[in-house]
Length: 241
Image (cartoon, rainbow, N blue to C red; front, side, top):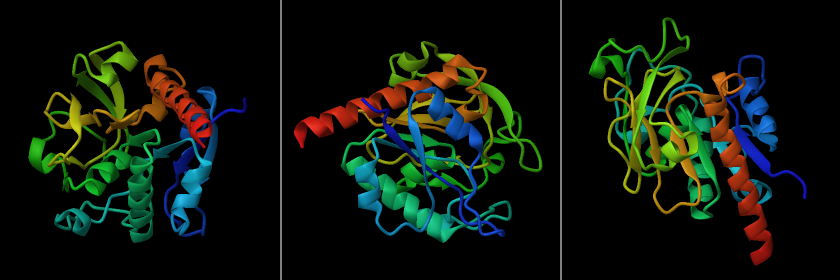
């Protein structure tokens, strides 16, 4: 049987007319045994795209337009891209309706929360201060500890309730969308991961597991289990078709 096809959303079109994406996402999916397929913003045929995929990763990147969650424009908000917002929210909605395995990473976690009716903090340091750095100036990754809820799917996957992970964000979930469960927090209380009870495989983490997955087996395990579930999803879909 061929490997499962994993969609990965890309950043929006840049000034050189390219749709960029850090290669670490692709590498992590390939190590897990999946075939990565990049999904750029602007695709009008969302349902058809998802019909070809076995799982979808909503990747990190710039900020979501605060008007989509009733927020305010903050001076630190950057890389607003209405085309990407619209496309990823449509992908998220259709993927959830089809019960396809979904993996949200950083911005992807925020997209999932907003799509389901939740809100975001426009600039996290204004709320929790800077005792814990979630990114370094001007916009660079850093690492901090994360406490995971015992008994959660995340704790089961990682076989741990406390980890250190790469963080690269200045926004986070404010109001949790209905149907989601908080399963990890940073030491300052910031929501770091959410799950959807009852869904076959819904995982959304605020940190960037792809950045350290090549050297950290715990972070790679998130991609491994996601691709495994994508393979099961494909098998079940073929059986029922």
